[in-house]
Image (tube, rainbow, N blue to C red; front, side, top):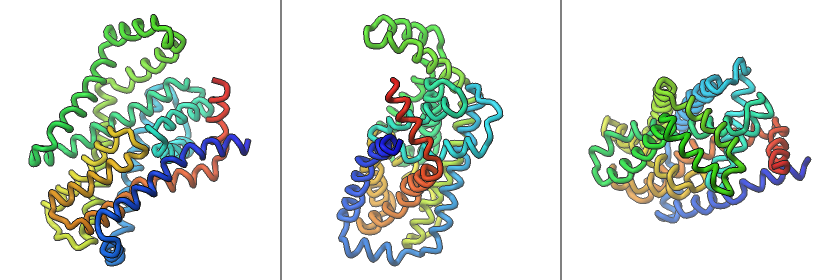
Length: 327
């Protein structure tokens, strides 16, 4: 069993190594000594508030996760157990392409009996509703900065098109039937139909409205956290700084997600540092320091919480490997 858990942990190694490389690259964007001075001079009294806002983000996203579970048939699932699975999924975000997040479907089957395919549909719905939420937060910033319109429009159109295809049952079922005639896909036809039925339920209009509303408010919390980071680095307070901070955090989240890089590593950092320099005129050293501080308070804080849950829930590590070996 120890070997099985080690196998899952090894999946995280590429993302963790890549994260360290990105960490060094962000520092080297500016002068090493100047970035260090910026971080040391940060008003650390703001940082607990930033972490609380990150926890606020996680809390609302957990409510969305639990709401989704109810929609796909997981009734009366205890909140502590649901929260354990939700938090345990955080480290999986730094697996290549975030494919490790499919393990949440395995965990749900073991814990609740929900099919793996329907569990994975919950993971997909989480990602899409988060994407729509941060896109909404980005709207005013994109209007004020037209250079971001193409990326914004492509991502928004892609998400809306995917939801429409899922909700137009004749078209979706036709595509499934078409896939069932292909040699490699026909063996997965049952799983694909289970996945589709879960997705169809999760993307009904009411569910989308609830999920995107929760996602927008939750990610606004992290945007305000970005604002506090800027204040801690000495940036002047005000509406312009706040709106820019929310836009930078939201749009960099979009860029990181569509990059498919582990945890958005590299893509998100470049976006944050670049937009802070462009929109607020921060020096490269200040932008690098702000990028490091917000990523530690968001991505790496989440990974740390998830690994803590893993240390108390070792059965989760075993179950994923058992499922893979039997596949």
